[in-house]
Amino acid sequence: MKASTSSTSYVRLDRMEEDETKLDHRKGVFPVLVGSEGTMEKFLLPTKLTRHPFIAQLLELSAKEYGYEQEGLLKIPYDASCFKKMLKLISKK
Image 1: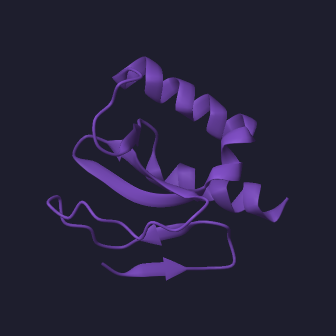
Image 2: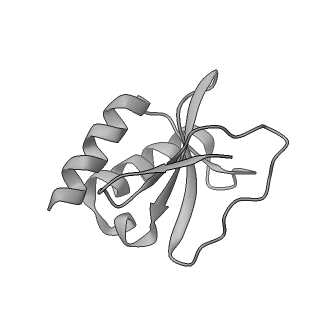
């Protein structure tokens, strides 16, 4: 698993095999899958971002789409490229 980092406050995982369930369990981050069923990208988000209105809205969307008892990683049904752009904007503030 390769992780690419930038000056933003998130880490994008470049490759992750489906059967690979162990993530880098760093304190203060949580993994999410963003995209549609066939093309989801994995992100590690700082837990402090859950307070941001944009992220909170996406978490609500996820709960409506998949329910509160999702198994595995949290899935967010949102375009991954738009999600990356919003994270960059959020991180600049």
